[in-house]
Amino acid sequence: MQFTDKYRPRKTSEVIGQQEQIGKIKTKVSDHNKSKLKKALLIYGPSGTGKTSAMHALARELELEIIEVNASDTRNTEGLENILLPAIRQQSLFSKGKIILIDEIDGLSGTNDRGGIPTVIKLIEESRYPIILTANDPWDQKFNSLRQKSVMVEFKAISFIDTVNHLKQICKKEKITFDEDAINNLGRLSSGDLRSALNDLENISSGSKKITKKDVENTSEREKEESIINALLKVFKTTNADIALGAYDNVDEDIDKIFLWLDENLPSEYKDINDIRNAYENLSIADVYFGRIRRWQYYRYYVYIYDLLSVGIALSKKEKNKDFVQYKPTSRILKIWIANQKNAKKKALAEKIASHTHTSKKRILHNMPYLIKILSNKKYLDKSTKEFQLEKEDIEWLKKYAN
Ligand SMILES: Nc1ncnc2c1ncn2[C@@H]1O[C@H](COP(=O)(O)OP(=O)(O)OP(=O)(O)O)[C@@H](O)[C@H]1O
Ligand SMILES: [Mg+2]
Image 1 (cartoon, rainbow, N blue to C red):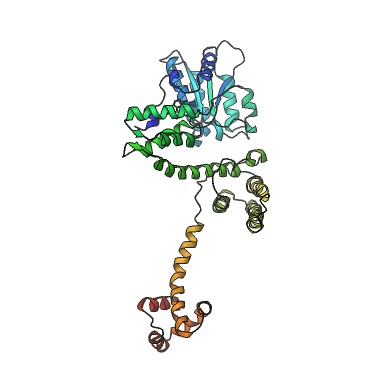
Image 2 (cartoon, rainbow, N blue to C red):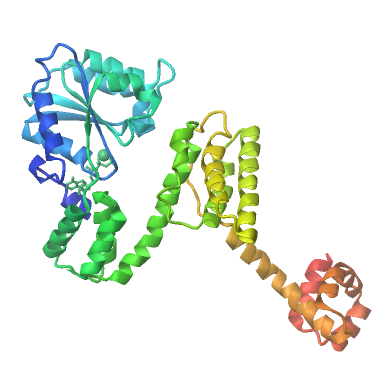
């Protein structure tokens, strides 16, 4: 069993750092039928802070049946009504009552009347059971109407101290030996996301049952990749300048890497030809500024670069691509390497011929197409083989490119 499952809080008292919030939710759920105006609870906050687990623990404690739909699963959003309408109309068979948990509503669409958000609002108005929604970011304007229909409760990022203490406790239970430094670094890396802290701990300790500072450093490379993917999501999936603006604030990666990531993933994210053109226009202007910084150390251009790479690219599109796109690390460096490998043979051959003909390698490379043509004639090839001391590999290469 994974650590995250094994150490999932079973009771609300085991949920770290959110006791006040849970108290508020408990009261609200218990009083649900007393209040005339039906409101949902909207639990929001960063990933891995206990939102989903706390709601399950709460249901168990209050002896309520929990009906759960994960709204980030598109198969569910389409059938939201079909799944939940019967549930809010039927009596609970085995428990005192029920709560309806619509988890991870971030991806719901709100635009048309068949969209997920209007459906949820309808459910809130009709349900006599409490409806609990969870979200990472409820401030998107598509949630305006939903926020009015909800009591908002914020789950906070888990504090550094709490994270470190939790990790140490688990190490004890799992008999994992650890460097104090390593655990501290893990705590820092997770930046308040307890799920990722637990997953890191599990990955690093699996096998050896101990964790060192070095192990943690390797993980931080992966974290870097995750942080840039989050930044790309912000930029690519919004047309709101405010959201895009700070996208790279927490990205611990060199700016030239950000360029490569954008370049690699832009074409799979933006589909409209004009959007792609506008986005590349911004990317290239940013690149011009970057060149000036390198050449003349005009560091204040950094501001423009970040603006172009965030807001510039975000506003290059008319609307966002609603499909999920798996972002890939840049393959450009790999492509350059492969191209170099291909050229390596040619260069070696050119060098060999150059040394026998008292010319430069560059000149031979330049004339290579003619040489290939000439040497496709067996008579010349035989002569040259002797003259230039060509080897079997060289001859194979020449033959390959002759056709
Ligand atoms: N406050 C917490 N107290 C104890 N364990 C926690 C807490 N938050 C997260 N965890 C651990 O992380 C795992 C995932 O937490 P959970 O699924 O509740 O997070 P979440 O806030 O719903 O995240 P998301 O926004 O990604 O859905 C839990 O199984 C538990 O092991
Ligand atoms: Mg959750």
